[in-house]
Image (cartoon, rainbow, N blue to C red; front, side, top):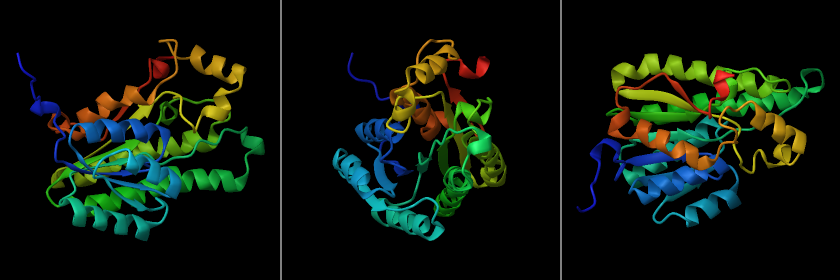
Length: 251
């Protein structure tokens, strides 16, 4: 038998914008979507990381943009539409992960975490929704910390809990316009963002101990769910945070 093209999970020719594209979680998504024929437009606030990921994907458009700047996000969306046509999907992979006891957590760190992980997510969602004139899919990267409470995660968990609820509200508001809004909640994953924490053997051991499958996540673990939510298969899913966590939220 020849190759079968499964239209249920087909993202070919879909115009998809990815914010935070230079991050460790986004890189696997960029590669997977590009390999399946999606038209990608990539943004990140770090020029070097953005250039590196854009160079690895043929014909991907890119623009430096900070997700906490609403005007920059709107301009990035406008350029994505100008280059690729109507926007079909968008992924928000921008985020920060500060871990600190609440009593010693710096005010500026807490505020920055909320600004990027929640406020930036709102600016991103609003900008891309305005461009989805015939419906579309918005996918955010939330976390198991949207639901579980870990010591030291006051800033991060509150931001990701807020993101999960933001997803639910936007899904209600935009459902009638054919826009589905969802999130993916990974367990702690091996990326450059987590590398310094995971270099501590005690931190790593404790992190793995609360995941029933006995390992940390990988960026590749998220690809299937991303495809599900962006392709025709995800057409009736909205307002959900789908945990890809090896059972972390069961503990």
